[in-house]
Length: 319
Figure 1 (cartoon, helix red, strand yellow):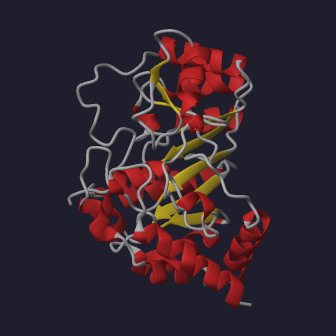
Figure 2: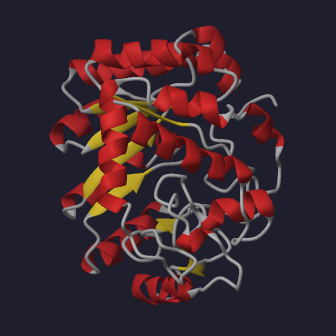
């Protein structure tokens, strides 16, 4: 596996022949419709969103329409122009992904020599100008030995830090990335190793542990309070559900929204265990991820289940 950076999205190898991405005018039009429909928060992500020549125009348009904007980026393309724009119209947060605390590890993951240095330069450039920055990583066998060092970098920078251990196959079916999964016991140990993280997990669980069983397949915000629009103008309930889509350029945002929101009514068949499982608020339950790993939205992932059991055990036993 030469490169696992952005291995999944925005389209995981499915859209190579889909044609051109939306034009600046088309994106502005979609943003106008979304804002008129009540969209308040916008996440601009990729791939790498700053690779588009019109990134600044799109960002400015969203902010001037009153949207609260978060940007996910690798930080390598942060420029004077973009930084000045962020100073004029501040984002809620610029989240930058690190894949290691050293150039050797980070660049091995991205497959790009020098990418670590460029990402760090971008982080520091934004911070010196007062832009809110958050750091994150995907935990994998390639970088688990540097997780503490990445956390230390965030502390030194005065930024928030988060990590995610749940790796899943690509949309095109490639399962090679599963070889990079960190075993659940090790990953949960890292999640719960400091008081703040343990307290956050405990509070999260206490707030949600009494949720009643659900008879619906999807119980998240996808298609209810959130949506994803890919570079080609297809609206989906979320990034992880490309099989539910509607061309927002063909009709309108509202028509596309109503079309994809129908997935909220999907109900699983008999024998589906996850809807009534007491660990479902802890395991990372997601029918879309089950589809990627098991080939069905009702699939049961032993890897995911292990996280639910181990997180609950840690929350209940640790002080």
